[in-house]
Image (tube, rainbow, N blue to C red):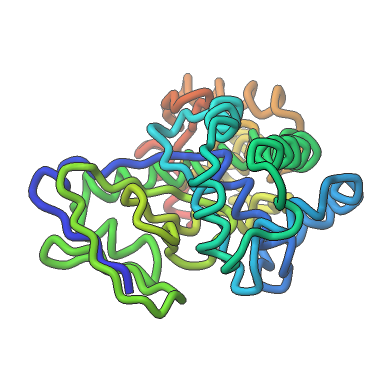
Length: 318
């Protein structure tokens, strides 16, 4: 059990972040044991051929049989706008002591793939991760980021509507919040209590965890939790259309309106409905001009959400 003790200032400073490097590192768990990550099996299947040409010796040395990964793969993001280029640049400057310490914390030793001079090993680490990103993440990252950003928007709405406590108690079945203490039930048998003391708690949605998790060591307070909406990411969506609404709006717009009960980007919607992003954008502009959907810019994405008027239009058919 890990307990983060928050004072009043810490409660006010709880924030969200998105870390491409964290996603990259956690994806190694799905690669090692696909059976534990059924929602990401389509991603694994799509990227299987691309992974065959990577430095698998280095990549597999970054995860153990418990599916633990070194803390240097889980940097605390400063915002939801973090870029992989910046995180890999920071990782390149990893000290030899921190590199070895985090590997030993996971494996009990430094794996053979990273034996020898630490600087050369760190270069191999960064190169292997960069190749993994380019081959398996770069083509799909806009879709993934859209899901992660939509999750953050949803959690923000929860805080506004029901308060921080309700949000924290809803991010994972293994995370509980009460009386200023966030408890995370980890597989690590060690019982730890960490007073945040003004350093802030960062919540990081991810596609590659099934439960709340945290860094192995005593790094900056951070909880990684499963993002909502993963199940629909790799599948095209078939929404049953209310005939009367479809007759007024047309089937494509009626389907989009029905799907926008949760925030989504045009990129994500294009994947779900198996149409081009430009076609989705044309329909969304019409729906927005009619007051049936709202749009909000979030980082590099524009997220769309059905408006109250749009919900009322559908409600007799829901």
